[in-house]
Length: 363
Ligand SMILES: O=c1[nH]c(=O)c2nc[nH]c2[nH]1
Image (cartoon, rainbow, N blue to C red; front, side, top):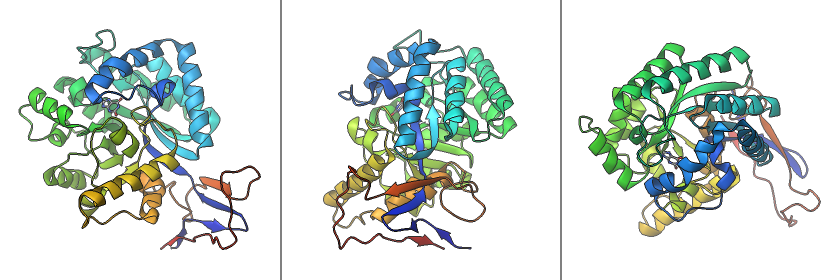
């Protein structure tokens, strides 16, 4: 079967919709600001206080409507969202994505550990019960393109007991799972201290049945060969979020290493660690990051534009285990497409006569 990445016309073409494999809808209100700290301090200083405001459904409605409209305008036809710990606001995000026509996985965030902002956490029991309520109520809506995703925030925010319960909930309901892994050196060290019995950060999730072929983990900058092997064996995927990795000075993912291990890989904006809600920006940052690795080691095989375009479309759908429905124009999939007019009046592109569109076909 042939599948085509572009359908060519005169100055217009269709291309597959962009797939954002990791975005915090609740952080959109401060995107582009507050990027002056490393991850753990950034979470405590900016992120948790803002996320705690989503108890207020009016505030939630405002921000969630804006972020879904904006990502759609930027060409994101599929998004994997983190919301907050608040069930009703998370259900509202799902309702908005359904109403505006975006394909989405929506996660009510789970966290029963937070020493910095004490009011922004749940007990283990609350988190488990509210996750079950979120899943039941969302599935009950029968939205055609919007599904729940089990969302332990990351290992430092969750006790082992909660991680175990979330692994069981995902398994019993055959659901997607999303979280963060190995983003920043200090975080990796903290996980070692909190889970001394585990062999690695990845092993913490594996131990609690949170690594499956429907799992997507953001970042993975410091994953070892052994950890990537575990990803490959379980079918779990990595979401590469280059804007965030640079903006929070977290690290640079070696994409070649991930691909060499045959681990599924997509791209994410990671708003608001990443300051842009555009997947086109994520494509550019992924290319820039790859070039930085080549500057550091001239032997490093820089990613090509075509490879990164694939990560933003088909790669993302594979990372979310949705490639039976979306990601390219293969016969039988839904037509999640962007119609691009490169000659639109007042548009950002100046066409020079010799410019030829590139036709990409994957077979
Ligand atoms: O970039 C990130 N953004 C977050 O909100 C977060 N939470 C845990 N780890 C995280 N990393």
